[in-house]
Image (cartoon, rainbow, N blue to C red; front, top):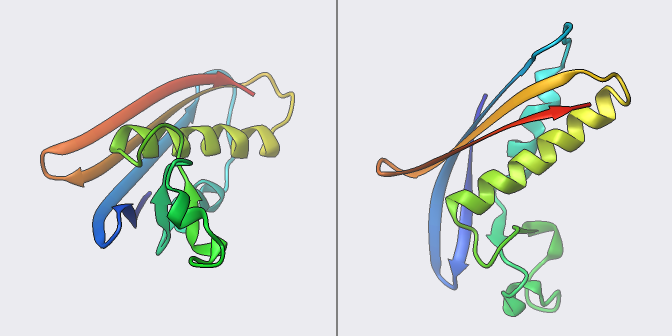
Amino acid sequence: MVAAFTSMAIPGVGCFWCGQSASRALNGWMSVDFGALKDIFKFLDHKMLISDQDRTFLDSQIFDPAGIVVMPGKNPSVENVALYCMNEAVDVLAKLFPGEGVDYQIEITIQETDNNVFSLEQTVTV
């Protein structure tokens, strides 16, 4: 699945991002509505991705909180956006299959430019 979203790390400077996600069950079978995982990227569409240190963007008197997504870490780098998406993917699978004991391998790839791509892979048991 692929989606695109924008990051605003510096006032007036935007970055275009492209994200991909893949997951597979390592033991047993998996029946996942991939729309649930795609929604992670859709949620980021047309949002400003910031860190919790960006006080101006967190001011609801200036910016609508519905248009802001706080990323982990000190900035919305490709690494931190991938980590955010990974955490959300794990949460989605845990909600879909609570206590099933199935191992999932999840891979998230975020691309900012042709030369700036980051992939994060994690195996989780849900």
